[in-house]
Length: 83
Image 1 (cartoon, rainbow, N blue to C red):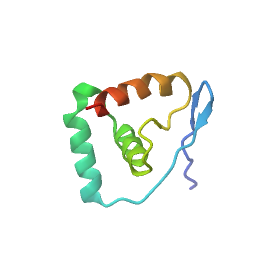
Image 2 (image 1 turned 90 degrees about the vertical axis):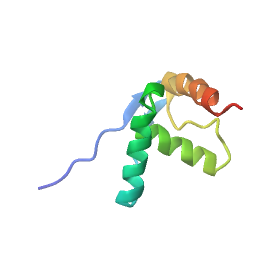
Image 3 (image 1 turned 120 degrees about the vertical axis):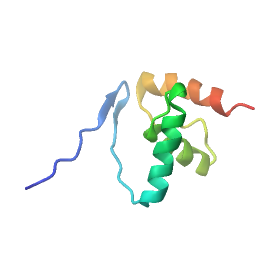
Image 4 (image 1 turned 30 degrees about the vertical axis):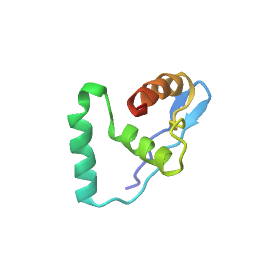
């Protein structure tokens, strides 16, 4: 039996690749709980991971999304990080 990788999502500027990484169950469960608690802000687990990566490289303007979805979420992201 062969497992198929999910197809990348298509945006205005091409596809966003699906990435895989290892994470402990404890950390993953905490991220899921936080994303669920922030559901009023429409935060997904993928959003949380992208934000963490952008913060890690010191580039909060990078959302990791392609096309118009990137533009929409980028302004929403900046609104959540502005002090």
